[in-house]
Image (tube, rainbow, N blue to C red; front, side):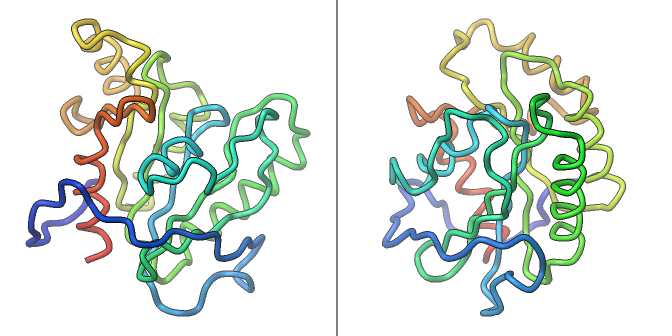
Length: 206
């Protein structure tokens, strides 16, 4: 499902006043309790999640990009403009992470997504260059089965020429069963898709 209708002004060139790491948590005891809206980012390890968040807030080093996929093992909360949170969820699907660790991540993420009282939107990231994998499709079915508000973003769009992207987007669309036009093509390098994604985010935190 997609974000509900909210009356808003156009949000081109969103002004980021502040963006800072707030806290990390492994369960609900560590979640923020200030009532601010939250936008969560989910996707496979190496999908470009850290780069995307940094690009959105115009801060290269806010979310650290690890050279070791699967290293993040907590839910990280970043306070943006003192009024809402970006929530960085651990990446999934990295084979070198022990099965028991992956299972604990799954429980932690599931608990947050189902029970966080201020979660307004989940941004589901997929690499534009690859068809959705098994873990992507399992995650998508789970999100849809629980009727969670989700936006789909195809990252690393600069890696594919615009004239050649249709087939890649259709592969993601067909694999997940979502309309191709609903998938936001995003590049942390060129900034493509940034305005459109911000429009979607603004609706969820209004």
